[in-house]
Length: 133
Ligand SMILES: Nc1ncnc2c1ncn2[C@@H]1O[C@H](COP(=O)(O)OP(=O)(O)OP(=O)(O)O)[C@@H](O)[C@H]1O
Ligand SMILES: [Mg+2]
Image (cartoon, rainbow, N blue to C red; front, side, top):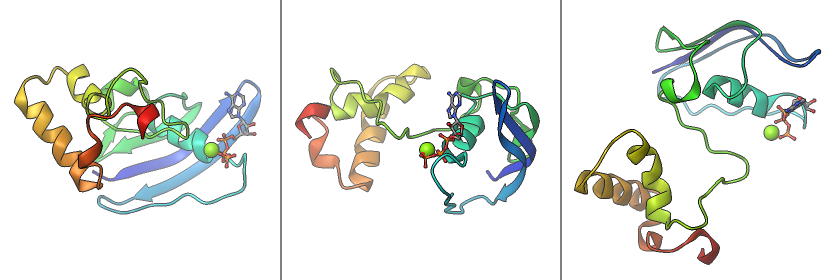
């Protein structure tokens, strides 16, 4: 699923933070944003995920226009600069949260969580709480 951004503008109040940005990110591509502090990197990610509204332009995922969709209807993930972990949940339950919020249940959730954690070398830590990492 590629991401296509065309003529995107984002404002905070009267201040325009992103102005007329167009960008095509092909499916499967590892894409990096690099720029000085305050140039709008986080704002762009928040707008792609739907947490900050676009004031103009269009965002498309694989051809689907998501510009006006709320975050939970975009089927996209975002890792925040602060980790936003639930301190009272284990690593496994933190990772499982998104799946459970979408209504997935049963052993399939545990299998997916274990596979995802093993893939990033964290399989041995799934019972720990964030403060114990
Ligand atoms: N919630 C907000 N309300 C008003 N202005 C904001 C808000 N968030 C960010 N800004 C402003 O928008 C501009 C872009 O900020 P943003 O956080 O997107 O930059 P950044 O490139 O991610 O910076 P950094 O490298 O420090 O993370 C900055 O001028 C910032 O002060
Ligand atoms: Mg940032």
